[in-house]
Length: 296
Image 1: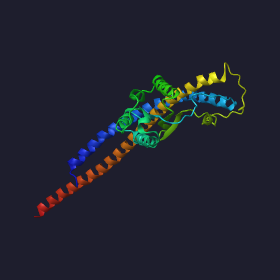
Image 2: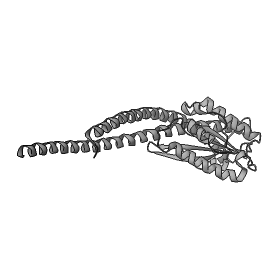
Image 3: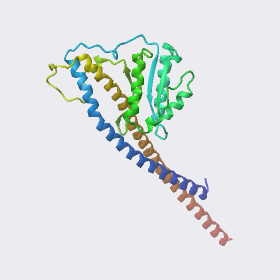
Image 4: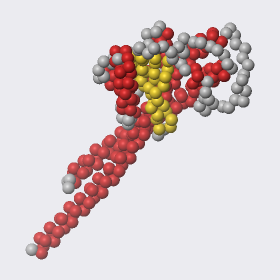
């Protein structure tokens, strides 16, 4: 059995860790609240953009766009979102593991040299550097730490330009979707080319509309409207994924620190009980020595 001094030292050490995890939980909770506000303020605009796209499609407009053209896949871009720091449970590990599976999958199809990875976050950027044959396309650590629309739009413009020029034929997004504080869903989503048939379905959380066969008068033309609308939807999608991943990160870190705090409290209780038992045993032994000495 450990000495009283050793047990006391362990209790003091865990108490110090407990203060750290409690403070980190409070900080993550505050950041999560701000991230949730950012998503809630942005979602109505994004949903309205998708609703406009859905309404146009439901009106039976035959529109072709270069964003919807499906080509033979020779080069692929993957935009993967993670965090700049750790201590957030399996948040980063799940993203990195799934990214490795995607690279293995596409590597057999087009070769590793034809896979472009855009790592948003230092953790995933470090992981990509260790993957043989895969080179990260730029540094997006600042965007992960402080999400802003300008940098997200610049990344979207780069991807759109490469797609329209025929440099890449497919773009996919990999990020954690914030479902709730205790649940973050790893999401793999097609970014380019756009599947307009998928957009014509029922939108999640959309309000019912009895007048589905709306009659539109479009000026100057449907092609012009789509030409302006689709890039906005694409830029907004990158920003949405960035905010979604950011909120998921803070939620995962808050839950991880909550679990660490609970474990620290349980361990302190166990060590305190062990300390009291050891102290009681030591007192009992001293009393027995005293009684034995007097009887002798």
